[in-house]
Amino acid sequence: MKKIKKILIANRGEIAIRVMRTCRELDLESVAIYSEADRTSLHVRYAHEAYCVGKAPSSESYLNIDKIIEVAKQSGADAIHPGYGFLSENADFARRCGEEGIVFIGPSPEVIVQMGDKIQAREAMTAAGIPVVPGTDGEIKSEDEALEVIKSIGLPVMIKASAGGGGKGMRLVKNESEVVSAVRAARSEAKSAFGDDAVYIEKYITSPHHIEFQILADQHGNTVHLFERECSVQRRHQKMIEETPSPLMTPELRDEMGKAAVEAAKAVNYVGAGTIEFLVDNDLNYYFLEMNTRLQVEHPITERVTGIDLVKQQIYAAEGRELEFGQDDLRQRGHAIECRIYAEDPDNNFMPSAGKVYKISTPLGLGVRTDGYVYEGYEIPIYYDPMISKLIVWGKTRDEAIARMRRALYEYKITGVKTSIKMLERVMNNENFIAGNYDTHFIEKNQEQLLSNGMKDNPEDMVIIAAFIDYLDKLGSNAAVTKEFVPAQSRWRKIPYVNHF
Ligand code: MV4
Image (cartoon, rainbow, N blue to C red; front, side):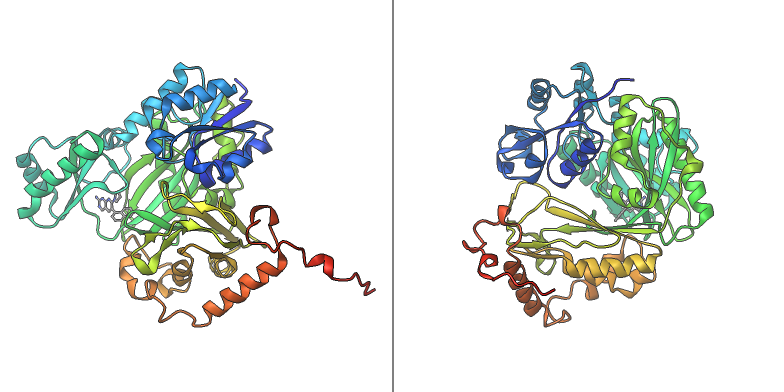
């Protein structure tokens, strides 16, 4: 077992801070990297040390493998945590870390390659006896072969890029006449996006649920699952809300899918934290979809109901420690929901809303967690993901968690940039969401109520926000980061001291 002492976090924003928080708790030093656009970012201030790795575009900074390795060596970091996105599922980076004697906090490069290739992933899961969506065994070699496969599985089908994932290089085919053009389109999209034009075919599952299982594995053959996350509330493959437990789940199905997830991870000798994604249809049939070989954005809801710090477990697994708990030690306690706060304007086709955060007031109180990184006066760079914060609540029951999320969203005030908060409030008040009656088409099916701009919103909102800003100004809070907004003089000193008691 090799004890890790210093971790370089090859990421930015909320997830970089999230990882550093655990580093502090474990008494490990953290090294931040940042791009020229991120000099004033909070993750830079939170770390013990910070190094600029290049210009604003990710390709020149957060994806610059040579530079990141150089900084790791220069700073004496013995491990790298990649977060999510950027280099987190880049097998070359994981391999390079190994070659340079730096621990990559994640699975082996071999597993990253295998799960990154969706055809290989399907094959591995089929071999392990995990249900996959009916479809082709391997790559579709010709358009004739595609037509043949479709004859046997029936329409509609999905043409998917083997190198794809997250919705890229995917085509839905409803009529036989569309097959040839769909295969060609998927191929060329995959070729230009991934440099790999291999495609395969799956039967199209109508209105599925997206349910994923968190797994954890050590280097000694112990693997557990930490139950499911329901991720069906998403828009154009961008998740908005996740919750656990899933309203669709039964104890029997959970047990069965959990076991399948553990088997899936074992079949590929997985080490660390990973996620097995499933599609679940209305008859509760489940099918392996993809495996994510990284820490996910929505990991906090799992942490909240299980009490396990997933980043800590990732570090322990990378050090070679044995898991301290078995499957029977794990329970789902209560209900957790995450809302992703994006700096986007839902009333203007979700246009990114970059700019300066003027005022921000973050919810607190019982059962509330926020993982964010913006502060008053911070200018959100245009170069990166528009997600600025995650709001996670816990309740004894789903109803309590929803009520708490409504309360927390009410308390969340951000001015200067547009955010998805209003739309999230509408979801929390949507009767289908409240009933737990939703699937991956929830946003489309409930468009009218969810995207109403202005008309159905409380007309007093503007007044309330104005009053709230005034209130915050009076508090004169966060002077350190709001220099330009705080009056030069403190009002405090002008008030004579009166002892009321
Ligand atoms: C599917 C599907 C239906 N049938 N595959 C979308 C993202 C990519 N990871 C896989 N996706 C889908 N694959 C078959 N055979 C429906 C989707 C899908 C979806 C999946 C998960 C979450 C949201 C989604 C939204 C639309 C389509």
